[in-house]
Length: 143
Image (cartoon, rainbow, N blue to C red):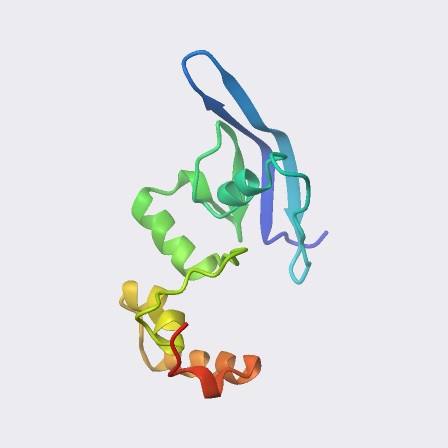
């Protein structure tokens, strides 16, 4: 059996108010193998965003576990989880969230700069990705 890069076990997420509890996820199990492509689809209100927030460590489940590359997300303290998200998790948003005062290059490098990790290796990887995506002529442009 292949080693999974992402495993969710019995994920439950409830949102509570004084008089109401809404169970957005009820015992979700998921395993993703290396190289596997995953699409999360469903009607509005079905728990897609909630699931993605839990898988990315942005929110805590009511119960259950998420393990990414052998590391349990919810056993980490806040600092470790922040570092882990910054280095290991990528989010693609439905609507882009670019800062209008920054160039394309600055917007792309912003998450790395916030982490204080812009170095030669990062710049090399940045140039590779820019070439791959065909964005070389747009790096000085603003959104």
